[in-house]
Structure formats: C-alpha cells, structure tokens
Image 1 (cartoon, one colour):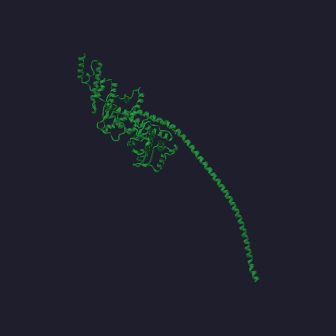
Image 2 (cartoon, rainbow over the protein chains, first blue to last red):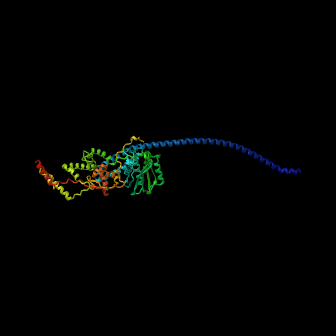
Image 3 (cartoon, chains in turn orange, blue):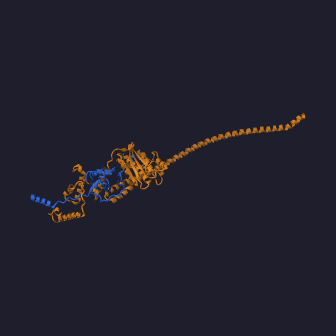
Length: 427
Length: 124
C-alpha cells in the first residue's frame, strides 16, 4: 500500500514540482509584467501630458499665425487700396481735363453747326464730329465716375423725354434707338446728367449686344413712385452668370476697383451702379424684354422729378448763344443766318396778332434796303401786296430775264439822264 | 471723393442735333432757302406724338408767314435741322410755303405821268 502510495506519489512528485516551478515562473512573469505595465503607464501619462503641452503650444502658435496672416492681409488690402486710390486720383485729374475739353469742343461744334447750318454738306460733317465727340465725352464721364469724380452739372431741369434723347445721342448706334411716350415730368437739374449717362450706358449695352439693325426701344412710363425708363433690346439676353455679375455691380454696396473691369474695360454696369447709388435712383437689368433680349429699367423716384416745365428749347438757348456769338463775329462778315438772328428784337409796330408776319417783313425789308438801296416805298409794298395764304406762282425764266433786263435798262437810263424816272423806263 | 462744390457745370447743348434729325440725310438748301416763307396750312391737326421741336414749329408757324431762317433761330437749331423738320411737315401737307417775297408790282407808267402832270399843274 505504502509502495502503492509512494508509487502513486512518486509519479505525482515531479508533476507537482513542475507545476510549482511553472507557477512560480508565472507569478514572476506576472509580477514583472505588472511592474513593466506600471512603468509604461507612468511613461504614457508623462508623454500625454507632454503632448497636451505641445498641443497647447501649437494652438497658441496657430493663433499667433492667424493673427499675423490677418495683419498681413489687412495691410496688403490697405496697400492695394492706397494704390487704387492713388491710381484713381491720378486718373480722375487726367479725365477731368478730358471732360472739360470734350464739353468745350461740343460747344464749339454747336456754334459751328449754327454758323454753317445752311450748307447740308458741312452740317452733316459737323454732326458726325458732334456724334464722335459725344461718345468721347460719355467715355470720359464714365471713367471719371469710376474714379470717384463728377459728371458735370446741368443748370436747368430737362424733360424726361429730352433726357432719353440726350442719352440716345451719346452712343454709336443712336439711329437704332426709338423713344416712345412722353410724360409731363422733368428731371431735377442735379440728376439730369447722371440719368442721361446711365441711360446711355444701358443703351450702349443694348445696341452692342443685339444684332445690327434691330431696334432698341426706350419706353417712358409714369409709375406710382416715379417715372420708369424701360430699355428693351432684341438681343440674346444675358446668361445667369452675366446677370449675377450685373446685379453685383449695380447693387449700391458694390465695391468696384478700376483694375477689375477687364480689358477692354466693361464699365457700363459699374458706372450705372455707382451713379444710381450716389443720386438715389434705381437700375435693374434682370428682366427679359418682350423681344427676347434684356430689359433694363431705370426708375427715377419722385424726389428727382419735378413738374417744372423746362424752358422750351427755342427761346431759352437761342438768344444767349447768339449774343456771345454775335459779339465775337461782328467784325467779320457774318454769315447770313446770323444776320437774321441778330436782327433787332421784334418791336410791336403792328397789332400783336400779326407780330410774326411783321417781324418777317421787317427783317426782309432791312435786307432789301442794305443790299439794294432801293427806294423806301418798295420795302412795304410786298407785304401789302401779299395775299395771306395763296402761294405765289413761280416766276418763269423769261419773266425773270425780262425783269432783270428792265432793271438794267432802268439803271442805265438813270445814269444817262437825270430827268427820266425809273418807272418810265420799266414796262 | 470730391466735394459737390468741385463739380463744374456743363455748358454744351443737351439734345444733339443728329438725334433730332434721327440721323437722316439733310435736305438740299435749294429746297427751302433761308428766305422761303412758311406757315401752317389752314385747318390742320398736328401730327400725333410730335417731338418738342415739331410742336415748337407748329406754334411758331401758326401765327403767319415766317422765314426758314427765323424758324431755325427761334428753335435755336442749325438751319439745316429746322429745314429737315419743315420739309417733313411740308411733305405731310401741313405747310404752305412761298419763295422770297416778290418785288413790288411795277406801277403803270400812265399813272406816274398823271401824277407828275398833276404835281406840275399844282406846284409848277
């Protein structure tokens, strides 16, 4: 039994011992692992603390970096703005001279048109010059506006219709433009030029971006809040991108830099937006015209309108123009139209009802006296002999010849003898 | 930005003459010479939607005969432009026009002789 036990325990002995050894080794390993673990944890904690610090430092650096970036950006913007302002100031000064010259030239051309207006050839050439000069003036005005300059102020109010026609005169293809509708409103003097320039820019766009030969219409409509000038063209219209760009330029907050307008510069909308914001009217180009093109609308609010009637074209301009003109031209042989216009103001020799006719007669009479030196009685006789309405038959060549012959005979006889009267010779 | 005081005034005319003519060719000076007299034909209604210039001519010419040069002067327009507008009205039949006033009617020799005779009898 004991043997059996010993036999039984014997074989168990080494197993147990082996187990014990394994257990001991395991315990040792566990203990070592624990120690390592603790050490690693400590290391890890240290490292993460270190990382946190570094992260904090990184964030701080980031903030500093951002600050620096911002500062740089703002300084750059400032420098750019300064450069832009300087460019604008230089341009503005340069363009002001051009504007003045364009205006001066226009006045000269106008005078020439009145002076040589009787000759259709010369007048047509002068009109072509006038047309080119008007476009030049508009361009100069556009640049001036973009540079923060001014357009030049009109002294008088102008009817909405005349503002539209003035705008029409400032573009190349003015003959494609039709102005429809008249309202009994005038534009106040300070807004006359701005509205005309804006409308001219819209018309220039409308004519440039529609097929040659297609009409462009300006419709004038009174609306409850003012007067609308509606420009319709028959072009292709604008894509969404172009519309967005136009809307951005036309909005009152638009910041426009001269350098962002492209080459060749397209400053129509920029100019329109700036002027509209400055003078308080509205411009929009976002609708479609009935002809398929763009419909641009200028809304002139009531504040910029007046019911004051502009001095009608005729008497307001004429006397002043001719007075200055007359004083300059008097020493020279004045052209015929001016002689007429410089004739003394009509004096009421006759009842007012016949005033105009009499004025005509007086002036005719004067001319006859100065040129021919004919007897005084002759001057009156045509008037009294003229029936009021029936046109006189045109004299035939033979009759003219015979009368001239009679005149010649008369003067000859007058030189030959002193006794024969003029009448006796002329039959 | 400059102050409003800096804004200089514009002195040129407002509506250009080629806009008033609509860019059309100008009529010959022979057609309506400076001294041709024009007036409105009787019982005429103004054309629909007249331009301000046509309206002004209508008013000017309703008072009796007026020369082309005077019409231009009153309108403050070059003669050629006024001539074109007058020609339009003429072609629409609104105008009566007349060449320069004819010279005086020549007095009959017999009357002069009688007057002379009478004077001689009385004072001679």
